[in-house]
Image 1 (tube, rainbow, N blue to C red):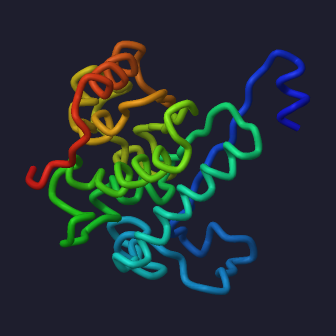
Image 2: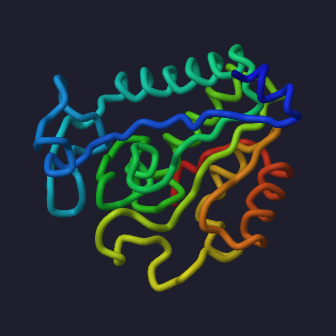
Length: 206
């Protein structure tokens, strides 16, 4: 397929995602998967629980799986790939304080601390694909359900200031990267520029 797309002078890439935990009512016929959902803290939201809180070994395996999938995408001839960090999928569940109440290095009181899983995924993906493949991450302030779950609260769109909490994600973007989602053009541009000129690092404190 990629050969046919390239022959038409176009480019293409897959979106990589892990759904994390979902409420049973969202599943077809109220069914559950053959093994429990994996998620940061067994929480669908601040009020509902479901699934299995990931151990650090589970997290390491998931990070490795993202990297392996990214490498396969490159080997299949894709020109870019996108990591889904939106709409309450797994990476977003690590970002959200209602679904991430972990006390280890993948949790924390601040959003910056809770980005560690995303940063580790990005680093592993980049390690597996090298520096010549565009890697983009989808960002969104919205989640399915009540509008009070959006981030940052009380804002219609992300602004330049809103992206400062994502410093660890920005600083992990040191090669060919892109962002997509509900960001203003200034915020999206800033996310990339700050990432290119900063050293990859994750804060150890808020």
